[in-house]
Every structure is written in C-alpha cells, then in structure tokens.
Amino acid sequence: MTNEVTVINLPSHRLLLRRESHRMTVAPIPLVRPVVVLGGWRSPRLMANALARRLAPLTSGSIDDFLRVSYPLASSIESAASIARHAIENHPAHATTPRAAPREFDIVAISMGGLIARFLASGLAWGDSPPTFRVRRIFSISTPHRGASLARWIRPDSAARAMRPGSAFLSNLDGSTTDPGSAAGETPRYPIESPELICYVQRLDWWVGTWNTAPRLHPLRCARAGGPIRAALSHFTAHANPAIVIDVARHLRGEPGLDAGLDGPAGHPPTPTPPPTPST
Image (cartoon, rainbow, N blue to C red; front, side, top):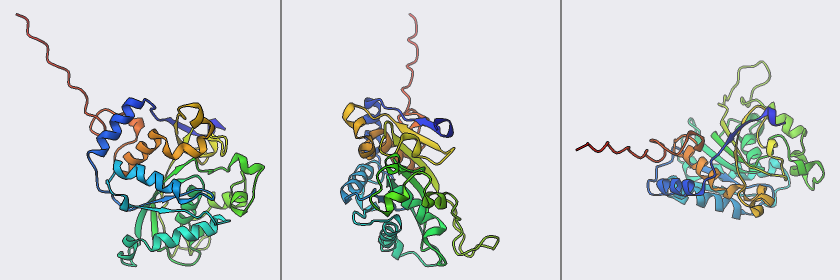
C-alpha cells in the first residue's frame, strides 16, 4: 500500500525543532482565517484543547483564534458533524459575515475529525441547503481516510462502522460532489471549492494503519514517533508530535512546511560566511 502514497518525511532533530518553535513564538502572525480544531472518535475536549494550545503561540499568539470542538457522546459521524456545524455557525466570526459571503475556516482535525471536516466541506453535509460556511484547508492528523485497521474487528457504534476500510460512508465521501443542491448533469446551485487537504501521521500508528491516513495517491507527511512510549501510543500522541505541530503552524502562518527546510526567509536566516581575513 505504500506505493499508493507519496511520503514526505518531516525532520525530527529536537534542537532544530526547538529553535524553530522559538522563532515562531517570538514573531506571531495574524491568521488569514479562523481555525477550527476537531477532536477524534469519542474523544473528550482535552485533546482538541491541547492541540489548540500548542498551535496558538506558534501562530497568532491568541487561543481565541482557535475554536475547539469535541463530540464524546456522538455515536455517528453525521451526528458529530452536526455538533461541529452548529459550533462553527455560532462562531463570532461567522455571525458577523454577510449571508452572501459565507465565512471561510481552516480545520485542524484529529483522527475521525478529519472525516468530519471532509464531510462538512462536501455536498453530503448540506443536502439541498446552501452552505453557511466554507472549509478552505483541512489539516488531518492520523485520520482514517482509507479506514482504520482496528475497525476491521472492533466496531461498537455507527461511527466506528463508518471507519471500516471499504465502508459505504468512506466510498460516498471519496465520491461526494462538492456542489450540494445539484443533481448529476445539472448546473450546481451552490458551488463549493474543494478544500486543500494536508495529511499527517506519526509512524507506527497501529490503530488506523500508517498508510491509511491519506487518500490514495495523496501526499502524506510523516513524523517519527520518537521513543518507545510514544511509538506504542502513536495514534494518541500524534497531535502532540513537535514536527507535526510546527509543520501545521507554518502552513497556518503562510510559510512553507518543514520539508522545505529550516534555513532561509521562512525559517532561520542562514549563518553568514565571514569574509576572509586579509593577509599581512
């Protein structure tokens, strides 16, 4: 399955990541649009809060720029998406946007949250209604875009069954139109631009399966687990991986990802070469 995924390995050198984190923290940049942080399956708000609190100082410096949404009691992806949609529609930035111009949001999503983000960005979430907001970018972390390995054997609710590899939900999501309110062959009534999708995984994710965390033929940004405990709990610690957090933050700041390097205008300025000492 690895030959169906374009792998982008993120740097893992701790000193360089700490230096980059410091650079970003001391130079906050206003966000282009509000950011929604979506939690995973049955996850308490703790994980979404933790990710937002890591991203805020690396970007705008304000936690208020990050809307955190969790749905621990939701038993289906559709009901979780309804909770997320309600939270976004009640966001202050959304309330002040004219109806004729739906407000745009970026979404950073943990695990199942990435499927919810794609659901909200597609025609599946809106039916015959016009979209009330638009998803511009989705940053998914350990999302089972191609299904979760564990869901082959354990599926306690509708949401878990939807995450089984090859499920009807995943097939519909992959084939969903981005033009809600239109039938096949008709002019779309409410055209929506497909969001940019950036996928991340921390290696050794046995819960979902490393190569399931990006759609087929889609680039996958991989980070090392960094230690036996983090590796054993890879799926649950990916949202705290420094390389993943910094890479997401750089994109939110409008900078290239870590794979572009840490030197130069988007990272640390290169160390100047001293002029040669004149001979005497």
